[in-house]
Image 1 (tube, rainbow, N blue to C red):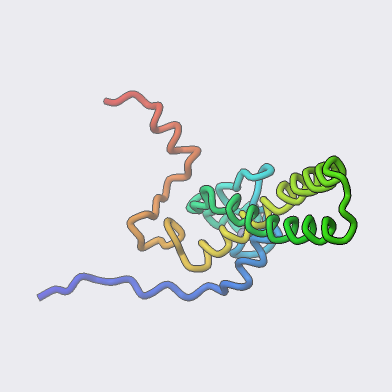
Image 2 (image 1 turned 180 degrees about the vertical axis):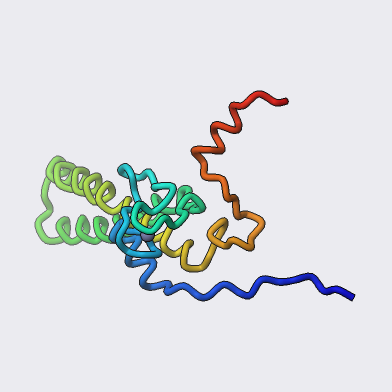
Length: 151
Ligand SMILES: [Zn+2]
């Protein structure tokens, strides 16, 4: 009786290193290639090592992380400044709104990169080639196929 062949388990990936590389906007696999081709657009492949990066499913997790981090920075500062100096409301708005916006925009790419580094390290979604979610066709080629007429 034949037993189905199983592929050997994939070797573990260093999670801390992968997250740190993602936070630095680098490929989690090699740490050299740029993860992003735009402000938040993830390259399909690492330009340095060719690692498939299109398997990420960051979705709306990075904004949640940014809200959490920025909230934990801004809210205590607002409270501390209010308790210490009682500045007028217009001054609060003039300080905290731009600071919140700038911090959020600055933190969004690194936190998205870190999340993708985590997904890569634990082989989530298509990063696991033995997973049902693994799709060897990158999104750019999928879009072309979706537009093709049905034969
Ligand atoms: Zn790479």
